[in-house]
Image 1: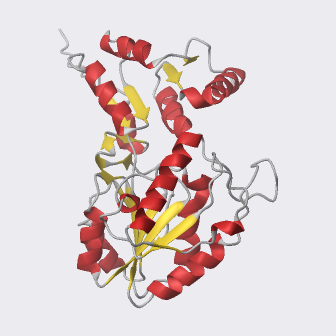
Image 2: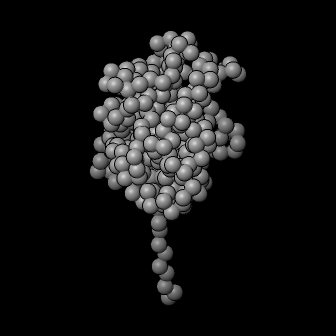
Amino acid sequence: MTAINSIVPALIAGNVVMLKHASQTLKVGERLEQALHAGGVPKAVFQNMVLDHETTSNLIANNGFDFINFTGSVGGGKAIEKAAAGTFTPIGLELGGKDPAYVMEDADIDLAVETLIDGAMFNSGQSCCGIERIYVCEKLHDEFVKKAVAIVSQYKLGNPLDKETTLGPLAHERFSQDIRAQINEAIAMGATPMIDENLFPEDNGGAYLAPQILTNVTHDMRIMHDETFGPAVGIMKVKDDEQAIALMNDSEFGLTASLWTKDIERAKNIADQIETGTVFMNRADYIDPALCWTGCKNTGRGGAMSEIGYHNLTRPKSYHFKKA
């Protein structure tokens, strides 16, 4: 899905597209190539490549492309910028997120819990704009946590090919190991785990990881400032909008934020102060092709989709003719 959001607009804009998919998902690139060719896209117009990082960097450094769009880690983004240095090749980067949500006292709490927990746990938390930290007003905090725990406790961790499964594995064991470390570090620092791991016997210490909700969290914990990218979320009580804004902005990333209130003017005022590319009100993890998809800080640079996205995929050209 992430690749399609880059491929299709580039093709519509009239470009030849070359795709280099992640090494752990090579089959996805092959399937996309087969599908596009079967749909009538000429083979010379869309090509899937299998390359190592060194070869990719060499192609970039030698002006192999007119535009580069990359979704991945901050380290990967830095490597691409370094390779492109001096080539003047434009770059679009989406490098990660630590997306916050803020639930205010007038929010529809049932809808907020359902949407935000789904946003945190969807695809086992492996979503670039997944909800990774939730700030709830003091009035609703305890009720929100109770409802959130009830939802997650009903999940079924297991084989994603099993129809009963609602939570599958992480993409690689090394990812689950880092998330376990974040959770265990937070607990050691005073966080409270709200989900009984015994409910998920399929957690085998490998890629299958039990979901977790943590309370009594602080921003001294990695779980609240490092990207998690897995089925774990911290929920923190806040006293007012000022504190919530400060905490939401206390991050190296800036992709999306989700605000929950019935007051549009209040949401607009808060949104103006949040350092993210997108601000949602009463929804989360939602893409509209008409709106620019962008980020700030270490989330990256540039913008995809919308009219702005097409500007990145084209070059202006002026014609100034005078009749003789």
